[in-house]
Length: 71
Image (cartoon, rainbow, N blue to C red; front, side, top):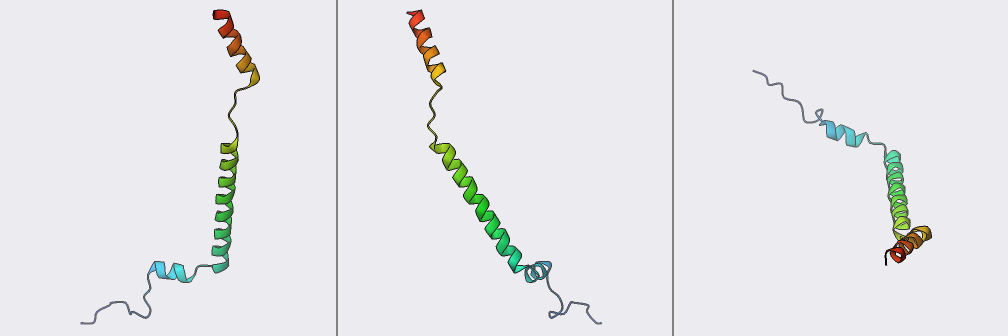
C-alpha cells in the first residue's frame, strides 16, 4: 500500500509561504509609518500634559464674590 504523505520538498506551511512572499520595502514603509504615528501621539500628549490647568479669571472672580457676600 502506498502512503499519500506530502513530500517535504514540496509541502510548505501557509506561514512559510506568507513570510517568504512578504514585500520588504512595504514592511519598511509600514514600520516608518507606525513610528511616525507613535512619535506624533507622544508629542501631542506631552503638549497636552505640559499645559497649566488654571481656571478662567471670570470663574475665579465669581468665586471670591460669592464668598464675600456670604460672610
